Length: 137
Image (cartoon, rainbow, N blue to C red; front, side):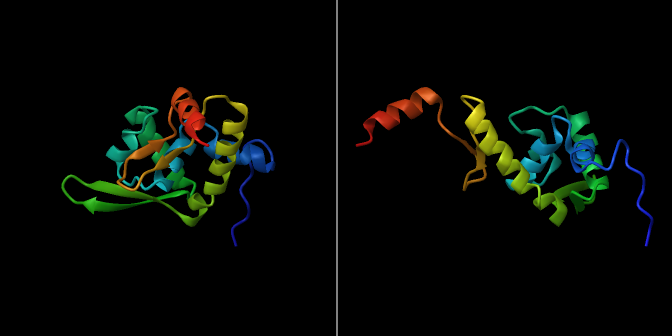
């Protein structure tokens, strides 16, 4: 068995998790993979507009951490399909906690979900939601 490698800052689970996922893009990549995106171009089309150089770096980092896997789906040029490993899929609970916290404490935020046709479904803007709520008996 390999000896445990030393931690960058401390043995704190939060600190070590943040060392892997604490930037502003990594969890968004995980979110998109959970929602069924698989290719680099699909990931690059996310509404947050991740720069392509940063997307490439985050995918590489997430692979190195065992969160994302990749497999070639085209030979010339080589293109890869990305997927979450079991370790990566376990982050779904973390993202759900972020959604719950954000909706409760940041007014106007919504959950972004994957729709049945592959498109993203976002809750309607607040003014539309209020109009709909008034119509309910």
